[in-house]
Length: 116
Image (cartoon, rainbow, N blue to C red; front, side):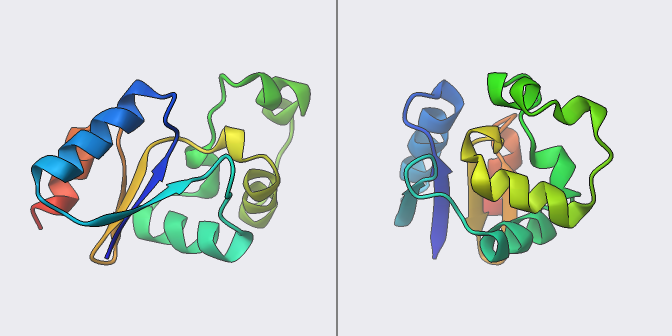
């Protein structure tokens, strides 16, 4: 099964939808702002991405500044908790396909995991 963590307002996210449809894939769409992944799901996603949770954070978001996250030294577990509580901070789109995950910035990252 393929899953897309999607924000319909994001052009990159909409492009990921189009790409998955072009590949003829059936996929589950998770509107993560309304239905955020929990800490366990986020931990699994970052493991599949092969990155630390801090690399999944949208540092340009207003919420990032409000929480003063730039000036904190946080553990991976703390980052996961922050992302679960503040899904607006999660980089998008994320595609999970056949046990692998990719952030669709650039969209070629998604194409890579679809072709494996």
